[in-house]
Image 1 (cartoon, one colour):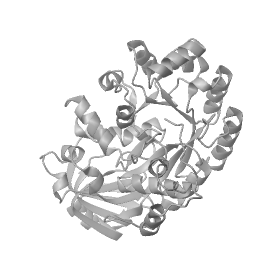
Image 2: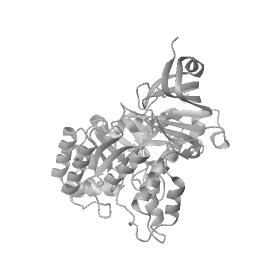
Image 3: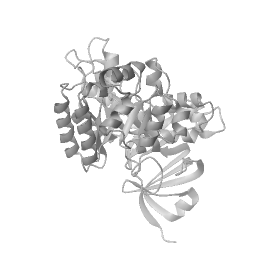
Image 4: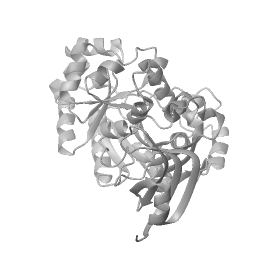
Length: 421
């Protein structure tokens, strides 16, 4: 048997199977040129491959990186700083948001919020995979002029800049669809098809939003977007907590994606999304933090725990993890690149250490992680095969220096951002 070369081999005690339906014992993942090249039993891998680097993780679960399908990077730090002596500088707040995502095992996110150009540069520097959801008609205080034409022009410029980028994609974001007239919605629908771009929007998130849509436009939000041509598989609708059976039927017929934001909905005092009905309708589901973090970070483990408890055992742990990995990839149009450990996918990976007490309490490896403090168990993170966290330490980000700046914010720093949900 000829020995093959590879860039990296990761030997793990447990590996989430590529199909997501179980856990493999004592397997090795082979990474070459940023992509998954093989997954096989560790004993066989030792005979078949000669990697440049071999990492042994004897008490760890190796799984795909998580995908936060809706978050506003920087809003958590800004919310904390708003009541303090001074606001955190916008770049440091965003850098903290990136650090929080990576440290919790999130390797890709859809950022809905201000400063997309600056955020893209920070993501590139730190290695985070990013979908820039470019706000159209940003609310006052959200970093835009409020004129949909200006923000649309900027969105198209950014799309052109990152059209072929391997780790940054773009989408249109509609922070408040009610604030956009029918002509603008129809124009965005046409552009979405022409440039093959996704559209992200909070929909049916409250009874107030629905009443406003009916009062101003004569239709419920989903029906109005259907009239404008926006109800397509390219749409990722967030929250979706206030739904009638006809709404779910319309969403399923159109094939839209849905981003569940259970912690944000609970924090806002809203109802929870009808998970069972959405699953029964066959809709593509993902998980996100919501664009207003209110002091929370972008960690998805709390959202997954809420979904597990709300499902009352009808959702298996591996199904929940799939919502936050391949589910997010599908909703953001990235399913051909990330979301599973299949050969050929980008090596966006996470290791969680089960050696401590936080991961115990259940014989079921995945259930223990979802019920425990999984956020604190992340030991290693890779994006496209580049290791960004090694045994709990950042490899690129200078955390001590950033922490020092966060602890002593400048009075001249920018004011908190807001207006997105």
